[in-house]
Length: 391
Image (cartoon, rainbow, N blue to C red):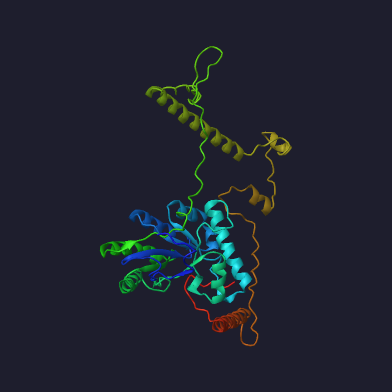
């Protein structure tokens, strides 16, 4: 169904003027995209041939641009949800306008390659559904339709997927039609969606796709394919050459045939022999290095004559230990290593330094929690899991 900002300023889904018939619903998803969960939701919608509207945050789009382009490529409607999921009534009018424009420009530049002055999809939803008369005037001045929802799934609460499914169907049976608000950043929503679509089909509900007045948003830029000239050209030799047909590549030489089994055996034997020769050379080098060469300069003159026995040479204990084989124990004494001094933490006023640091950290944490609590009470904020953003 087509929704024009010329007819509507705000839409909740239950209005008779809006045009939804009995048992017609519109699926909407906020706060995305995000890895894993958004992909699962898109896979489910594609499998069931269902289209939805995604109200996306600018900074999330910058983090996952591929998912933004996939939403548009698969025919879903890409709408706006500020730049950082900001609670707009808390800001000045100039800041509210800047946050809306920044988020919209980010989405359009990622999805379509450029951001136009007039939004391709004039659909907008307030973060936390928090709005005021001042923000409504700003949104209307920008030519946007502010969307609410008469069926809120509350899937951000800490409940299981079946509880989310049951709440949606209970509210839908009461309303009879409307806009369903969900979040594609929640794992329980991705898990619940296949069962929800089956239940809607079983009970006779019809999912309606909401599009802008110009027939929907444009698809991403297609891949440009270069045109090919198919007219034949006549070269100088008179032969006709087709330009559309690429020239034939030179035929590569065929691979040599595999060697016979005898050749492979001979090569293996040669490799084995080469390895054995290398081991033999290594062993011979090791044995020659162990043998001590004796020259005439190192042996006394009396030892050269066979009739004269050389006198025993007195050697120090260090020399004996040096000449002894590696297997014998050395006679030199090794000095004992000095024992390392153990450092101890000084005890000051009955507590260690580490304990004082822990005490300081606890005090700072408690002060920070108290400050945050006072800030929440003063500004009237509501804590919502995975949605509360403080700038």
